[in-house]
Length: 384
Image (tube, rainbow, N blue to C red):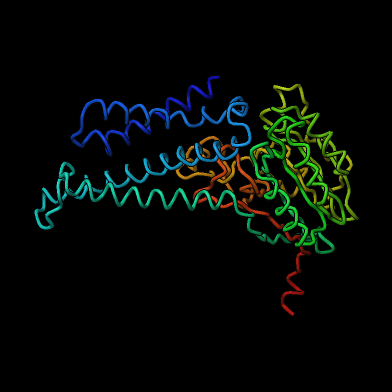
């Protein structure tokens, strides 16, 4: 309840500023401005208007309705960002021009220039929102990251599918095509580091079964994320087990003689659901001469970093919609990409193959990550 209230307040603040900059400045009857203001406030509550309780109202049109409301809301967010940036730059240039007096920068109160800039900003904002929608619904691009280690004896191709967020309003073809694209990479292992299921199992059972077509020679591995846990991690984990996947939560599995995969449930939601998090138990059977992979949905620093060589995480979506990158970064030390931790271990944070809430992404493209683990060449061999 607190989440919906907070997002509605922030959303109405954004649309309120937009109303002031795009509507209130123009001369029109009070009743027209009142109607427009009400519409802007409704748009500000966009996230609240996508609740699944409205499915009974819209029926088969609910998916289209939900996508449309999200599009309007994110368009407002992008337009707000562009407008604030534009006004700050305009104000600075105007102030500087008043001091220097060379360039004749028009006043921010100049209605003629404001109309032109508003029109241009609206067009750019709409194009950015359309681009964000395309980025959200398209099949994720394949991103290849190569990691070398002296512990690796043979090359491994590991596919990472994080944050699919399977829910009833998602178009099933998106999951099917993502599975097909992943299989085309012919991975040796597939890692699903959480937030795979984001709805009641009964509502998305058919879509979850599409994941059963994922194929990897050395297996598919799963750990729960905060959304899996919110919907009941036992059910999500049970569904993964039915598909033949390995659920590695507080345990690990050896892969050949040089690789080990261990995992833990999501750090931040496990406590709320009474799930233990035991990093040592995940690597209890892993010798230090193996390359050890930790699956942890939320990227984090661990005291016992010496028990793994590579941490694979998701959760952040890379910010998903700019400028939320800054907020996500404020709450998560790691945003996206490959990092080296203090003890020399590596951390890879995937932007995810899906997204939460709006099926949109802006300046944070989705990805099917391929981690190529290769043997590290010795300096002697490199000199030859």
